[in-house]
Amino acid sequence: MNNKLKRFGITVAATIVVLYLLFLIIPFTLTGMVNSYLPQITKTVEDTTGFKLKLENVHLITTPKLTAGLKIGHTDLLLPDEDPVLSADNLQVKISLLPLLIKKIEVDKVSGKNINAYLK
Image 1 (tube, rainbow, N blue to C red):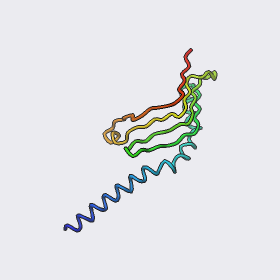
Image 2: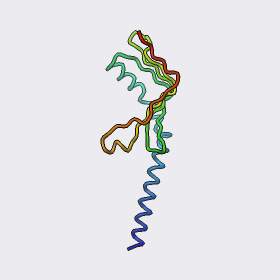
Image 3: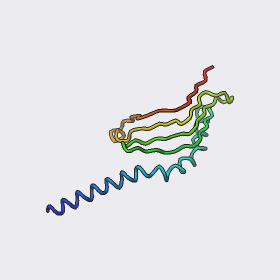
Image 4: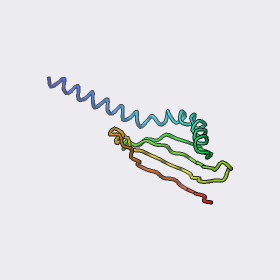
């Protein structure tokens, strides 16, 4: 009985470790897929809001503290007449994944560099 319990514990622990490592490695394989959806994302934003969205160098990111998000190298948000509304470099947005289990969205981090907002 004790031997079966020990094996079960080792199996569960090994499974958790493998899933955790996959979680940390998966952005390297999915970043290309995320970038393939950029034209569809920008078209949807333009169709629903009228704003033109330009995204460059988008990467999926995960962290050891179980957060996931996007890192965008450069982004521009333009009015329909091409006047700029917002531009930013190295934009990062991360959400915590554990609160999703209880149907809550918790933003872990929003950051960027060279953020410019243009007001008329």
